[in-house]
Image (cartoon, rainbow, N blue to C red; front, side, top):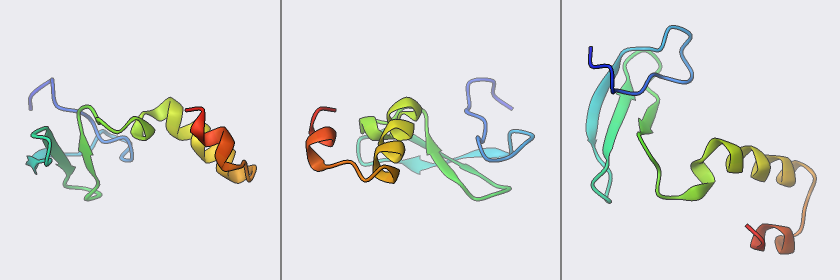
Length: 72
């Protein structure tokens, strides 16, 4: 197995990652054969970054207004 391939964040043992085509931006897409979850090495949409995603989810749970989201 190649060491530069990402590991599945959902599977405990890292899963069995295989290439699964490309995105419309030309980035390599990977798929876990165990849980069928799909992922990309680096997302161009910033909300997929773990830190920002956690922040957005917490704001949604707190029922924050659109003004708060516009500051991102």
